[in-house]
Image (cartoon, rainbow, N blue to C red; front, side, top):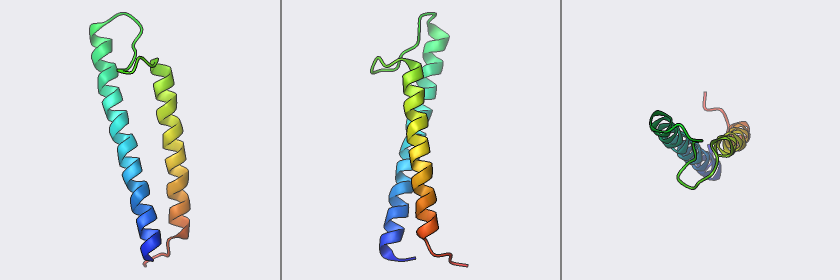
Length: 78
């Protein structure tokens, strides 16, 4: 694997981990509000839950596509 390709794959993996972390935090925040309130749930930035979920789904899809592109350009080591 060339240096540039390896760096691009590493950057994508870090982005994927960041999105996964945000999704985990969002899920925990959502469950806390669900257990303590009967009003519509919003995140800490006052974004409706549906918008936040859609944002996470969109970012997830973008990163999946980027990771797929990176894997196609990375030579197989086996």
